[in-house]
Image 1: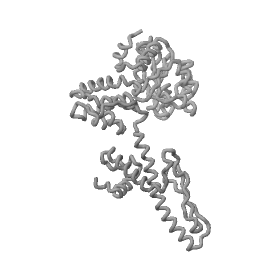
Image 2 (image 1 turned 180 degrees about the vertical axis):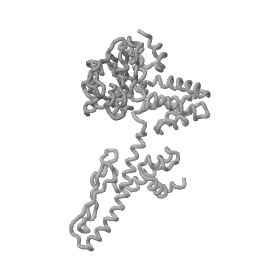
Image 3 (image 1 turned 135 degrees about the vertical axis):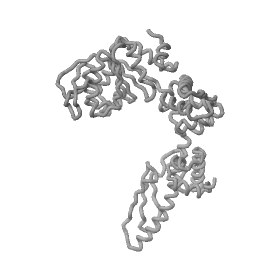
Image 4 (image 1 turned 45 degrees about the vertical axis):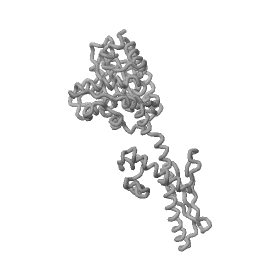
Length: 418
């Protein structure tokens, strides 16, 4: 069998992680057969390299290799693209045309984003896989093809099957040999290697010195979750290679290219520490404090409503209305409904609140804790301002309030002059 390192060099695969080595081993083993292969992995992990490996190390390597992005072809023309059509089969079909399966006869066809195929096309594909037969659009003549099919998807196909969006029989026909490409966050030892490779590539491309990371920035990059995987890392390195004048990248510079990393994490990296990879990029502490914001907003709205309800009660007594009226307020919190009932008499003028809060972390918080809530609200706004470097528009977005409300709060807490 071909040496794994030589395969990496030939196809430009960077990394020494166990997951990527195992994927290459399986690709080499299955290449000598004619079995169908299903490549899975998140978007941006580099799935497109593995069909090429399978084709180049197979007996079909001198035949045609065609890569098809199923998600980029409109549903109305996908059958024509894959299986061809006859002249006059539809408007615009001024001549007969061979489809990809016919063109790739004796070769390999790579179906990227196979989960995007319509169900009717999936049935046609299943027939090709089982018997090698297909019919051009607008024809009744059955044709044969001898094609090796390699498919790829970033969709969890078992979930798509349960939702009726993907055929179960096609899944098992494609999944004869599965190859999973691990996400970049599970290839931590490869991150810096990839960074250096991309940095050198863009240095040559743009004819400028390559960018390098200092120790703190390296730690930050190593523990970032990379939702866009290798594609995202490459994009980040290219942006920095073009934009940054100082070729040594610090943690503050890197911060600008990573979507909202945790402020707490930045402090750890700056101190030379390291933390375990995060499940997401959100600052959980910051989100936790948003609950206080909701409570503070609720407290204010309750006070306003009490005043309005008192006026309404007086008005109803003046016009001799004896039936109670109820108002449903939905916008105080997305997960709670608060019902206010106008009193019939002055003895029942208290406002009833249901579903005020359902969290053991805040059992002691009640609408009467005005001072505590206001203090927390002020602290929350101050932290949000620091996080967004004083940018009020972004601060309002993070807090989930309008800019107008933010300006009112800043004035109320004396923060508008900071």
